[in-house]
Amino acid sequence: PFPIYDQLRQSTPVRYDENRSCWDIFRYEDVHRILKDPATFSSRRGMDIKRRETILTMDPPRHNQMRGVVNKAFTPKVINDLAPHITSITNELLNTVEGHGEMDIVSDLAVPLPVIVIAELLGVPPEDRQLFKDWSDILVKGPDENTEEAFNQVVAEKEQASEELSAYFARIVDQRRTEPKDDLISQLLSAEIEGQKLNDEEVIAFSVLLLAAGNETTTNLITNTIRRLTEDQALQQQLKGNPDLIPGFIEEVLRFYPPIQAIGRVATRDVEIGGMMIKTGDQVISWVASANRDETKFKNPESFVVDRKPNPHLAFGFGIHFCLGAPLARLEGKIALRTILERLNEIQYLTGSELSYIQSPFVYGVKQYPITFQ
Ligand code: HEM
Image (cartoon, rainbow, N blue to C red; front, side, top):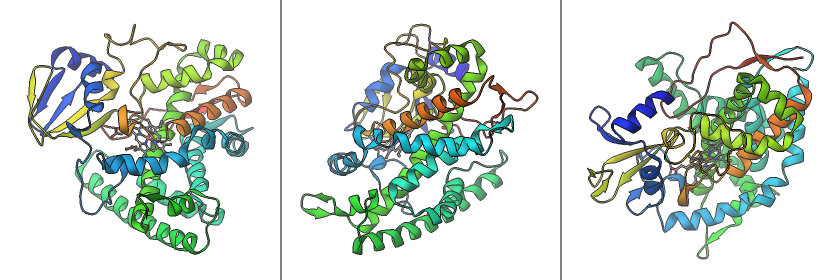
């Protein structure tokens, strides 16, 4: 998709799409400005009654209050303390494929790792993990084919899984109210906003959001990272010899192959962007994937520069909605890559297999990524 963004950034940096009834924004500067201004560009988009409200679709002042509560659960210290545990989960997953000489990065590592980490963080008991993973899988599933029927079926399945998952979390919330444990759900239940506790609905909605926002994105980050590793064998050797390059490498993967391609907002007033008049109530789609390759912001944007500095990519968004899980996603990405580099040699994409992309305009990732190794 990336060459198309380059063309659009040149030809129609701000354009109205009649078919989709929304604005598309392709330049870094404009995307940045939109994300920085929540008063003009609201996050309360596409709210349907079925979906509960979460921080992702809240505006200030409510957003600040809720975000303040959940920030406490995601401090750098809390996240960094998870490192040894994430490393051991990664090693366990790799143990099952070691010696086979072949694995699918997606299903053997990139899908289960974030699911297990989130499940444990929330306090899902180990015996429920499979149940939990099945629901998460459905939540992130794309249609098998590019047809309306397949699409509708997936939507229906997702709605059901989301209902079941909410019911499941409702039970856990109930249990933790009477008997708190050392987990995120108990922590959220004891939090207060202006002297008032969060209600069950809010805690459940937030828990479901973590799965929906955190799992598929991190899966794609891990897969895109390993993909990059196989696309450049010299770079693979370089990273193996110098693991200090890993954090910068992950940032460049995020810029180059952002798991979320675009972020939606709704205009709250008439506003001009790039010489175009956006009207109150219009939908505005900011194409992060295009902004990340904007030549006015990044030198040689089409080159993958392992130690690019600075690297102000927008893969995690910007401003008040900046990804809550960014430290966790980065940590999982780094640990997955480091462990793979330590344990596997001569990592290569399995020749003959065809890349099959996830069918969504907003998500960048592949459905399988089979590799061979020594
Ligand atoms: C918000 C991307 C991983 C939880 C966002 C936003 C982006 C994003 C672009 C901003 C959305 C907006 O402005 O409307 C990503 C990417 C990830 C990732 C690329 C992986 C590489 C995670 C993880 C979690 C998470 C692991 C949780 C465990 C959230 C939440 C928000 C959010 C709760 C809403 C924050 C708010 O509205 O204040 N993410 N995310 N994300 N992300 Fe992530």
